Image (cartoon, rainbow, N blue to C red; front, top):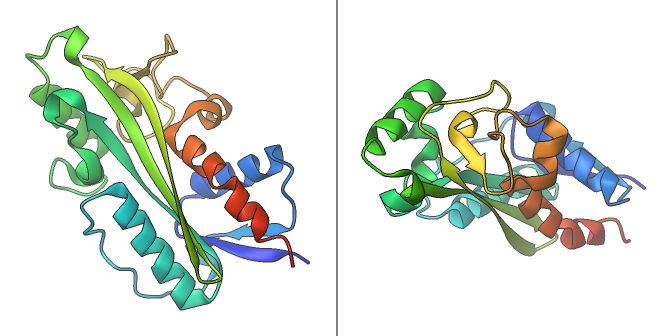
Length: 202
């Protein structure tokens, strides 16, 4: 029997990423659905101080509203020279939610005087699963550094400025499959696989 699992997102890339990770792990019996495929419900604002708090709040909301197991993630970039900021404020760093160009421009301005060796950063993702009265949280990190000019047109957010430690290309120059292998969210989702696998057992 197939069991539906809600991903608290309308982003098809996120839904497909989890589908690919489940397929690669050989986990069958789960049907991944997004917010557009369930009746609308009130989504609480992201007011947590940490990625884990925000992800768990979204997963709790989705599970309570739909009765389905719910996976939610919260992610962003943590820059060492900025004491870990933008962090949970990554998507609205410039003041407007989701304005990638303005967010990138502000980050570059704030790091203008920071030498290359101190431009270290990491993408961070917290993924939460709320199902059957249990809550599981997994964290994934992708270390790298911030370049001085954007490169690449794939991805979104800070991807054009982020050079992963093991790469000669930015996150925005990687293919989706390459990003799936290494990204912070992929690492967090893979850490959730045992909990997701348990949903397939009667």
